[in-house]
Image 1 (tube, protein in one colour):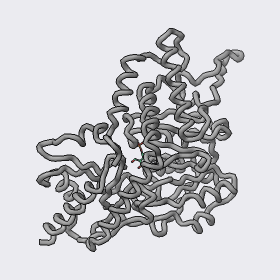
Image 2 (cartoon, rainbow, N blue to C red):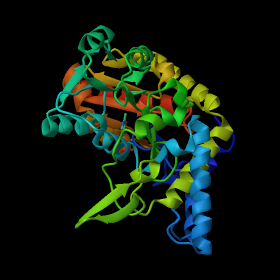
Image 3 (cartoon, protein in one colour):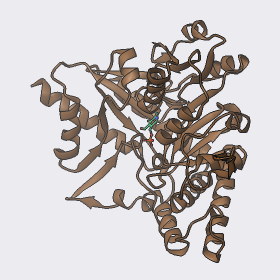
Image 4 (tube, rainbow, N blue to C red):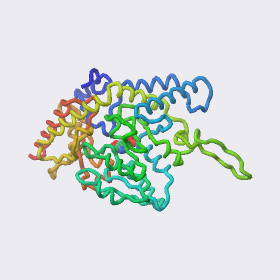
Length: 409
Ligand SMILES: Cc1ncc(COP(=O)(O)O)c(C=O)c1O
């Protein structure tokens, strides 16, 4: 456990109705760092003005300076250029924006892995319905996208591959590297959903796709913050689907008609006033995590994942889903008893234990595609972040065993 870390998460440091909270739902949303909340509040109170070079007064110039600095630092953390960073409200907005900004034709094909979250699946599903683009899905084999099927569905019309860096439903590693290499070999751009990857892995865009997206709220930053990275060369070939203030280069009359020229850089994707305070806090959060060290965070979470896997493996009434758990940040499993309701179990953990309130996630987990392709739709997921310890897992496993005894009676 990191020194003094619980002080950063006041809710974990106190009792509610006499019970301690054990938070094992960070894959949904991590608890927020006090440091980040404070950074957001300080920003709001000290610089509550707009940035983006709209106004030229003192406060606006300060706001622009901070906005620019946050972009440069976040770019530095992920090894990109600052003009490749687009601020968004989260992974969902980032992927929708990217999907709808690609210039696609009817004959084009998009390949997505069967592991994708609804925030990847649905924007491309709709594009396929509305624009007649072909959507091809890579089927799953042992909770992984099947590489040989992938190779068969690629062709000269493939315009994008989407593959998640870490699944939100199956624990462990997504072996994305060979997919990435194959797509790059064929000059096919790759979009990687990094929502589950970013909180506990060092992102280096030189080893990832051409487009990546992640959310601040899963790493302890405020809600409504996130990053969409688009490689510069690709960004120039896209047209932002979101337009408004800050996205225009010029507007003129051409005879009787109006002719508008739009910006062609990251600014064209950030229409309107931005969440400056949230972005500042996202930068401070990433700085905080980098100061702990992403490798140290990874090690801590890997140890917890292995520990949880070992403890859960001895329970014969469940089936653990996934493999290579030390590479991921969550473990999910499916109950094998017919009368085991995952929802009732979640309520039991939250309401019925004498000393603890345990927060977990259960159900389909916004992952309809993996659910369709694996036939698994009712899972229990526990997920880890910097505040978790082995004791959290001990209490969870003991409670699961008690629940199994109750329903077997
Ligand atoms: C793998 C994955 N992708 C995308 C998302 C969507 O993230 P957000 O709701 O922060 O936009 C989630 C959220 O749980 C996720 O787990």
